[in-house]
Amino acid sequence: MTGRLTAAAVYLILINAAAFAAMGADKARARRRAWRIPEKTLFLLSLFGGSIGSLAGMYTFRHKTRHMKFVIGMPLILILQLAAAGVLLYMNTIKI
Image (cartoon, rainbow, N blue to C red; front, side):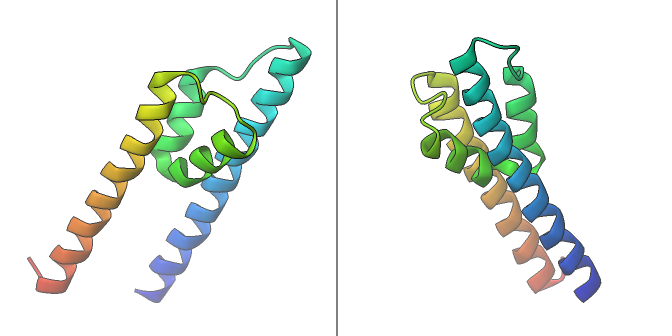
């Protein structure tokens, strides 16, 4: 069990770092009017576990904070992920 928890923790650290970096890179590209990271990619990083990194990147770099689909969508993804984690922990605790 410890190995799986360690692997999950490493995965979450990496995906959140990638999501944070993607927000920063997209902001830098927006300033230079260069090719941008697709919004779909930013949302997929969040959906795959990088929601905390995405939110941190949004507010650190002040990026996408005027787009309602990001202002509402990213926290909603985080809430759903936390709820899913809570359900999994509960089910594991009571051995359903």
